[in-house]
Image 1 (cartoon, one colour):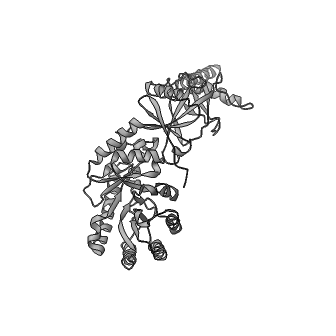
Image 2: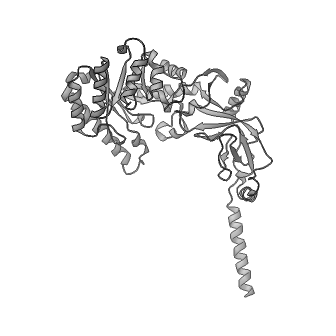
Image 3: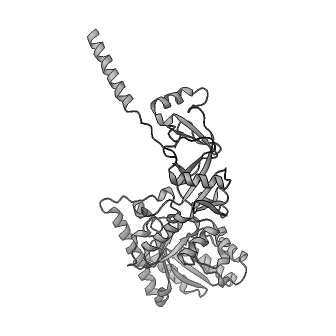
Length: 420
């Protein structure tokens, strides 16, 4: 019996040693040269609060790469919601030499109205929003080159009635469902009904089609599934365009056939009926856009925030301190804690390497705790950098945007007000 007990004990000890050897090893490092230089630039600019930073040189490199990828085969439409700053939008429009914008909110549409850009709505607006736009915009409504997105016969009737009541001439672009199933025209009959309404009202002018295909990039690229979804999207688009051509004839020649988006613009080569692509998020490349199709672009936007507190080690609050002790013993990447200014953003820490949020301690929008091995060598007042998961909304949370170029903070861009 004693012999069996010794074997059991030896076996248990061996398993324990194996488990101990399987502990996560320490990872992490101080800021690399890029983030060290960016940190110093922020300090020289006197910035000591959470700040959204745009690397203008990377932004320009991304925009130029996108233009090279499109290669002039299709037009580019810049997505305003993904670049929510007038200065940022103007910088990109100047670089791309286009006046084509896609806008998704009434406040942004009103703010951009003085530019008189060639504007396509990115989602259907309640007709009351369109009426509000024309009430608030001074001057001749015809000067506003706005294509209102319409998705159903019922909404088209509402816009027809608005045009009649206010004696407006409205350009309407039809949203079509190319497989995303988030609304839009989904049958030849529905399109036929809308064309009949359009043809009976001289105050309505058909301006094109818009088919968004975000689902394609999210479908696994296995067994031909992604290509099948892309083929379906383009065939559906072509069928609807052909139906419009049969009904309207020459009007199709100058139409806007909008497609794509940041995740999928690389899948278009200009060989189909689609004649323009919408891109915005890829230009600043948030974390969610780290995909194979966008591998030739760089992250160009970061959240910088200072470290407020560096305790001796990571500890859980009184009463559950044993949990923190156990976490440190098991995972050497939970040895050190860093409390930062703010937190709980739609973002992930990117520098210094090896930082992570604490699942035990939880999140905080006031002083979030990050844990690491200590190899990061962070001190109080040092900067931590996050990558936003996306640009829309996030760029509007931090006040003026710090523009980083040529090794310094060169200017500040005011963001648009946060809107739905």
